[in-house]
Image (tube, rainbow, N blue to C red; front, top):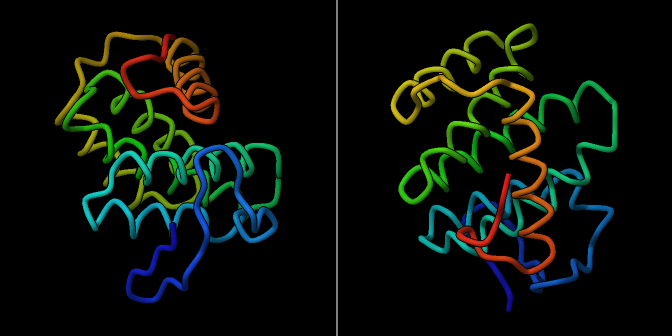
Length: 147
């Protein structure tokens, strides 16, 4: 399938394999964002998950900031179907952005307050986020993940 959305260029998005892996570091979340805005949430979550996984391994400051976007956008995509997972990803974005981009952290905090009861520990939420991403990359659906 080929995806085009505004400033995004056509990219081949497959269920288990991403062809342009070197570009995914930069474009994966943006492609996912386009898909999400087109109402293609499951495809968007796959793009976000792949981008999240790649960005997690790299330590540059830009990748750290992009991890915040990937987390925020996964939270937005899940907010209508899985409030607990949405909250976990919003909190992850807050952690990433709080010292670097406070205004983005505030945006994530507002999103978190709309979906969360703030009872879980951050460590548990981190494991939940990691489990969700691994499940998505393995071909799982949002209702098949576990914390």
